[in-house]
Amino acid sequence: MTSREELFQQPEYWLERIQNNVFRIVEDYMNRKGINQSELAQEWGVSKGYVSQILNGNFNFSLTKLIELCLKVGIAPELVLTSLCDFTRHEELRINHLRTDSIHRIEMSIASNEFFNEPLAA
Image (cartoon, rainbow, N blue to C red):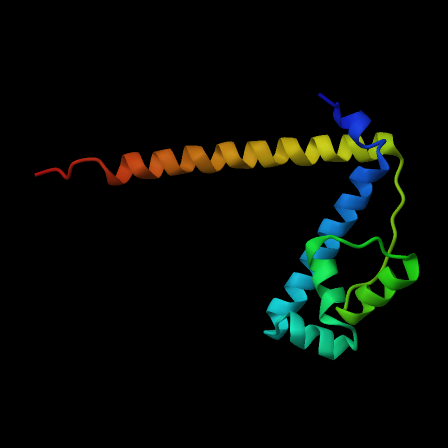
């Protein structure tokens, strides 16, 4: 199994991560505007196939195309470069926070169910 540190060293990881972010940004834009892929293609002046490629993750943008796409959906195309060590540390903190938050939600759910399932006093 690949360690997190090894994964972060692989260009494919970063490409897929960026593709997933672009997908979420474009999907959110379409949802906010209430438009489908065809309408988005028409709005952007691109083919439906191009929009489909973006949403299917079958693209490898040039930096120029990525910037253009970001601007079309109202996103600042800011590139933040971080050392892998700092990134790994940040990811570990984020994952630990998610785990803690999930555990807290489970505990609250259990407590809530126990409260509502108690028999009523006569």
